Length: 64
Image (cartoon, rainbow, N blue to C red):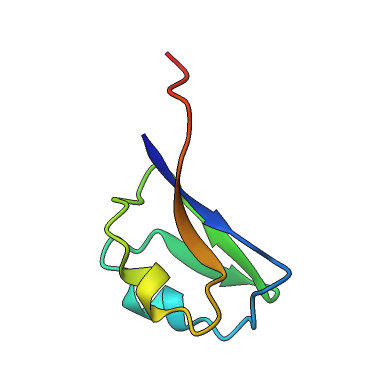
């Protein structure tokens, strides 16, 4: 199972990812990216839009 991961150290806080997310799972609040993991479809659009690679889709262990 994949999960969207945000690297705050790399992030430029440009909000480019917010505008391209087709599921509207991303929001910028006080220059901090918020991810709604329930809405995220893991399509990768935001990861491709990020100019510095601050967003990645990573494999995580299934919690079930």
